[in-house]
Every structure is written in structure tokens, then in C-alpha cells.
Length: 93
Image (cartoon, rainbow, N blue to C red):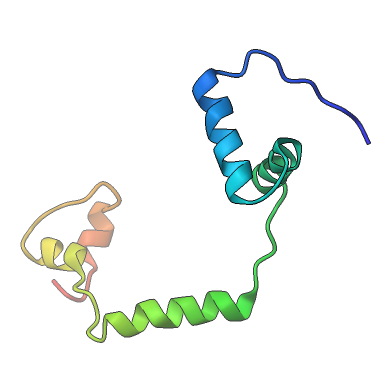
């Protein structure tokens, strides 16, 4: 495996790395490898976990959120993405 030497690490970064390595019960070298892997390599996504998290968030908001843009348009407000044709042809006007 390749070896990497890092110079001029700020003292506060070095101290934080030492604390974090101790907290995870890793050597500083191993902690650095884990941090680099987490920062640089894509993390696998578990679809079931992601769906469960989305459903939990959805359950916190039983009522649909208001469509603030539509309410603003009904009140006569215009938005950057509105074109004249788009505004004139809206059925909610």
C-alpha cells in the first residue's frame, strides 16, 4: 500500500484528529484513512432505509404544505420563471 506523509498540519486540527481517533479507538493513521474514505468514496445507499426515513418525515406533516407560489400568483405576484403565456393560460387565474 502507498504511504503518504502530510506536513504542516495545524495544531488544532492535529489535536482534534488525535481526540477523534481515541474516541473511535483507532490509531491516528487508521482514523485518517477512514476519514479519507468517507470523504472521497461514494457511500452505498440502502433504499429501504431511505424510504423509511422519507415516510417518517412525511408522517410528521399529515396536511399538505401550502402552495405558496400558487397563492402568490393568485394575489398577482410574478416570478422569474413565469412567462406571459404561462401566466395567461393558468386555469387557477
